[in-house]
Length: 189
Image (cartoon, rainbow, N blue to C red; front, top):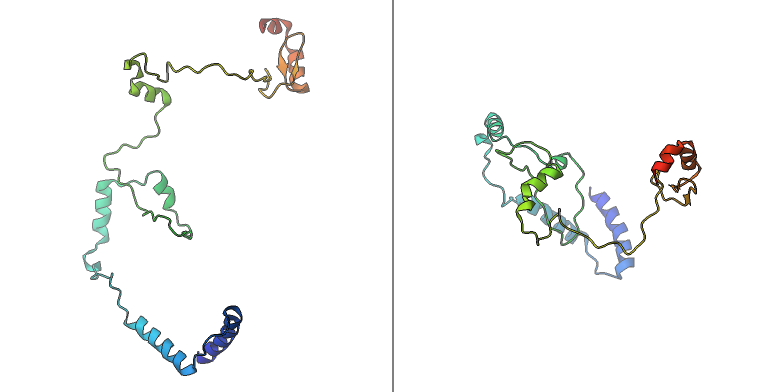
């Protein structure tokens, strides 16, 4: 191990001296002392956050029964986060978000409400008439001309049939207009 460390230190020292200028030389004895002191510090290090081992009190059956009673359900974003992914590197200053299950005890499992139901629940008809709501909101007319769209396909129409006055985008749509019976064309006017 010492032989490999010497090779690394020689290579590293030459690169470091080229990058940062000349440094003070460290003897082999001082380096060995430093390595030994670091190893001793790691061996003697006792994690201050480590609490008493509480594994004796933990029983898997009890936890499973509690989860069934609570009906914990993974909802929304947390359900997709539960899949294992590689941890992303955090930038300095970013907040840390704690991942976990969202408790939904007593909550029914249902999807999003339809828009009509949301409008009914808002009871917008009870508001005074001067308050703008979804039902009485009015926008002023556009200052731009209306878009010219193809009556057949809905794409931007660059042409207009002189007989039927229908707008069309290309030859395929023009063929459809030509194949229409004349009664349908006159009904468009």
